[in-house]
Image 1: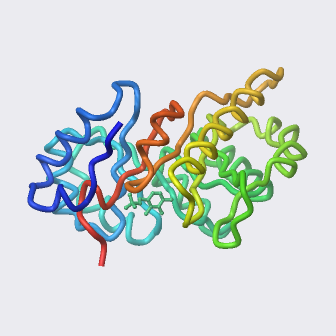
Image 2: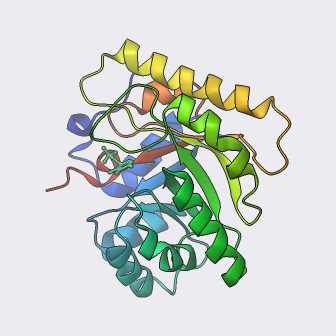
Image 3: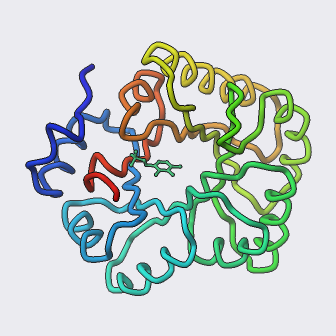
Length: 231
Ligand SMILES: *Cc1c(COP(=O)(O)O)cnc(C)c1O
């Protein structure tokens, strides 16, 4: 499959890009439009073109835009940034999904506040199948050790795994990494957990989403491909 690139999309409007990219995605794949550093006016254009899932990585920036977009019904907000424990409360009040849960203590903190606030946030566990000092997330052995405790977080809907590829991999290496992430989710799913579900995969950004689709991801997180290059 040939991916669309930012270069050949540059001359198109956001509406045209969204249409084209949606057509290129298999129907079950959920398109998360990553709107970090994108204005609320531009988010409005994407909404008009049919986008209902938006991803943000900074809490304050996201809350400001959410307030400006309050008149738009039916938006699902996805938190994709590094989450500090002292920002958990606001994050679960403002986001329905958190893709970037990267440590047990954070999951337990979210569970505790979710109980207090009577929310049931949807979570993805961020994993690293290859070591990457620039990214947080569980290694496979660490995750295996923590799964029983994660399964006891009864207020969380742990839906699957999220991963970000390290820079500098070849397309084949990226493909392999996504495939192994999917295999990991499947192997966790085959165990008898009470609470963990492992049906969702959040893999693939503008530069590598075609490989993620080949590995049967269920969500892609696209920013620059939809909105143009970030400054
Ligand atoms: C910024 C970001 C994206 C989107 O990246 P693009 O290259 O703009 O598609 C996806 N996932 C995460 C976690 C991000 O921080």
